[in-house]
Length: 185
Image (cartoon, rainbow, N blue to C red; front, side):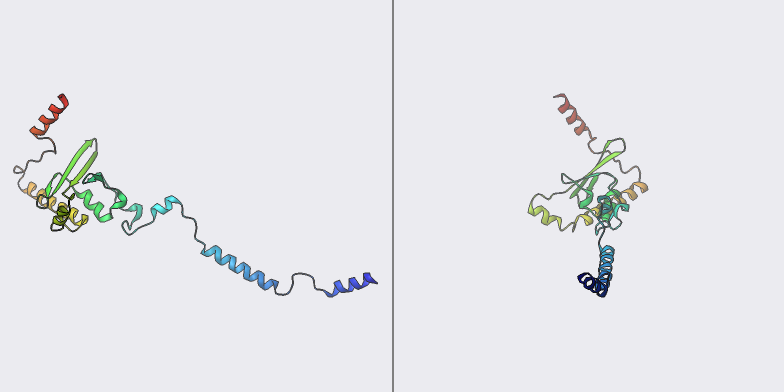
């Protein structure tokens, strides 16, 4: 009798998941699918470097520094300049003094195809920096003015080739004599 009562009770109870469980499973599946879609993928280091930035909108496809550049004794790094400044730096062709003889550019051959460009201007004292603002607003403006003046110089050289004699920096007689004396001493 007890066995019959238990059998009758088991027959009355439905088998399978409780009511509402199918709805909960559907909701859970939809939430998991949505999270998988919107979950950002892990960005690898190489892909991170390829991302465009405000300074380098083309990313790794943008311009590169063609030479080693030194600004007042400190090397200019790719991350500290933007694409406009890189193009202007790469356009500098020769040594000289520019912007009312305030900025000195020295282009050196380091051997083979390797060159370095050194840019110097007074900036140690506050008075120097305040005076600089009368000549150029920022580094981009400085580079643009140097490139413009060099273009004018190249045009004058083409028009009057005998008038301009350009020697590499450090090749004058006094400099060579001083280097020879220093090497001998």
